[in-house]
Image (cartoon, rainbow, N blue to C red):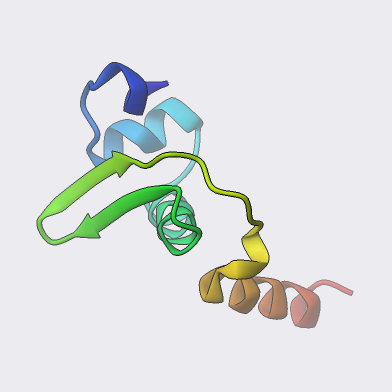
Length: 75
């Protein structure tokens, strides 16, 4: 909702809203960026919603990498 309202979009504010760590928010935004759902940059920090497109998280290299790690660590 914060993206739609145009409020504080800092990593810390987004993490606090979601109950996640800054690292988790950054990974999630990177995945959404790779899926063309948001335009995301860390330097300078910026987040902008994009029009919805059809696709899934498997279109994200970061998501696939995290899934690979999860399947190796968690039986």
